[in-house]
Image (cartoon, rainbow, N blue to C red; front, top):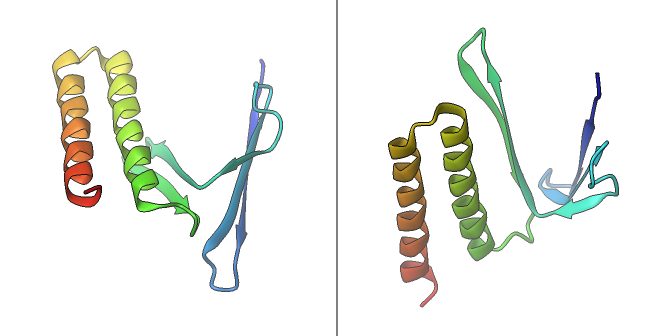
Length: 111
């Protein structure tokens, strides 16, 4: 069986806030160290029926970048959910929420 290893390194400042996020994935096209300003990682614990998450971002992550990040994540989640369940209507609702979220952000903060 083929295996891939994903490594995430987070360098913290004295205040324990992430200063730098680096990642790489062996066995993929991202084998060289990649830089990131933020990441969200989620696992599903089937035994406990709960999501386990890690959400981190650096001080350099701007608010408009965070809005873009969330918008794109919402869209990707909707597409993943649709591929897994074929619940087209619910996936479309998720995408509509993502668009509403992003438009409200732009109206309020990007004047």
